[in-house]
Length: 321
Length: 223
Image (cartoon, chains in turn cyan, red):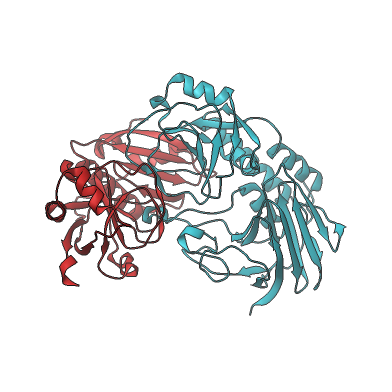
């Protein structure tokens, strides 16, 4: 049984249904997809106590509005936004109860990029490769399973989940963690596979210059513009790409591969964004400046584990601890 | 840690690609040899499918392993690789595909330009192209997009300076040492020389696998 959950009235620049992504499909050339900001997506699921990674609406840049068609619990996570329910401000990063007919209005701030709208129901939309991710160029996912983003007047349906109880969330710990994840400062990068192909100067330049996020950026990749890290024709065989890999085409302007990246890439990779800094990178808006600092894979993995432990502690402490 | 697996699987070296991924680079005298080794280890790993393995992505001379970085680290993965037993009994089943192509001189395609850049007439080009014994080296870029190669030197052109924003599904294209049929509509920087003679939806059912062999057959006159 599927119930109408909400009807979309304004779509922002892009509103599309995503979940945790496809798994084990890249060998067939199928994009991994998944949320751009994994932290905001994960916390959203935890706030609504989904036991499986649930489908959410990823809302990019601009203004989103929807009218709810039934009572629900919802959560809004991600970059800074003005969030209103029936023209009364509501908090982000918090489960909120809504009634039928309630109007949700979200205005993403200019220095933020995307929001995640989660609901307590399990969103019912097109499934491809075991995932509800919307990937336009693969014509996969979305309400009609054709890769289309949400449109004006689209109604999103869903089914109840079996969550029975509502746990307390340690809100001060959570807001502290959010501050840490999105704090200002350079984005940490690990050396990429082809770092040695570049001159030493290229790596130093990447870490000392600042780069602007261009409007050619999308869910596939973030295209940066600035002082070229190194102009170079380098012939190599295409090889697999990780989330956050920085490819440098001959013009020297870096491209950071994101959720909907193609599976193989033929440009040399100078760097790879640390997993813990991907959420912050994903919240960079068009024309914002980005700077980088160096890290190594072992330290970066430790940071990731610490962050994961912090998330576990917020959502899985019992009252005695 | 001794790294027996490096010699066992003819690995040149490996790199940490991410906090939760390593990329393995293979040795070999030829690309065919390297690519066969990629396919061999790939198959082997998939047969074991440890729970921590998230992705195992083969390409020309590389194999990337992405693992659950919160459960295991790369030392664990390397140790696991070191303990992999090679089983010679596994026979490698590769399939030969013969694929019908309509070579097209239509203005929106590049066949005429390709022929003049290569300095040969259309018939000579098609003859040499269809004589080429091709191999599937990688599936990637987009779902089911198979990199077939290697083209003889006389048929090689670098990719176009200006990629097209739309290449229709079923279009046959060449770039550098490779040729491919676009399985779905997508942007593309290759030179378009013809089209798959059947409906593009039947392409995915060919189910190309690394190591499969491919030859093209000209059916341009049969329409």
